[in-house]
Length: 242
Length: 126
Image (cartoon, rainbow over the protein chains, first blue to last red):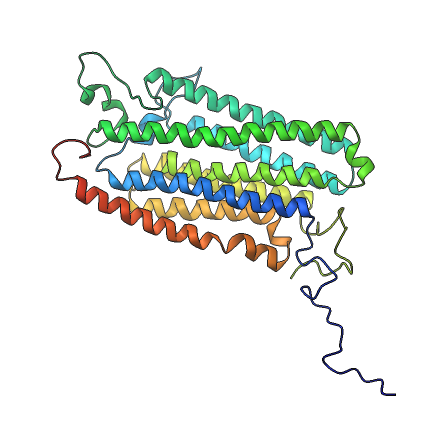
């Protein structure tokens, strides 16, 4: 009896040879990743459409001139400051979320609860800031399908504060529509994220994960939450900086 | 390929690949993100507003490069993708080639529309 094993009979132990999970990730987490990939496609399509419109017009509103208020502090004269605060809040809440995940790895319920609460507060602050920004623009006359308008005054005059080059009603209208659609869609994602965080916080408090032996659910909502931050990074660049 | 340390990969819910993200590292990534954002503000508020450089292709390229760097830090470290298996990383990132193609396609289209709407005396001429 020969004890040598031929090449063909050898049991393969590679990642893809069966008997193990090739991605080494739990099902729900993979599905969260694939959902986020598809969601990234949606946001990409929105932002690419914004770029297309911008490339298709001879002139475009100057973001430095449109966004220069700090609600309750100053009406104009401070370009980018308020959106800077919003960006900081969102990055900060992303950090508290990773810290919650990290605490979950150590099965430390108390820390998970604290960091989750901090994340939820950060999210609420961000949505609040966005509401103020929307209110401000709405008061100036921007909304879906509408731009600043005064009876009997030429658009050249009413729109002058928002342009640094030639003035165009069509550009201003496209800008308004896309701004409210894209930041609205992002704000909707943040709101859903806050809701998910609150639900998971409730489950943490109810000891659901303590009994389950793992805080993997915190990781999954964490992925979603970081994605929201990731989208904001791109919205910030293409709406406010470029 | 990271995380070869489990014989049976299925069913390991807790503590799978959490090498790499200690508290110290989390805060370090946070400060990188903060520094990149601060640099963007410096370019926008000091350099562009101060008239050192003017808005245009060059500055925009810098903004986009910094944005992609920030995106890398968020996805790789905060979302932990860097520590996942090679297969998962590929299945999530490679599809974005389509987005790159879509960007090239649509911006070309936008430029075309500008050239061809321009001659009209009325809407949509600007």
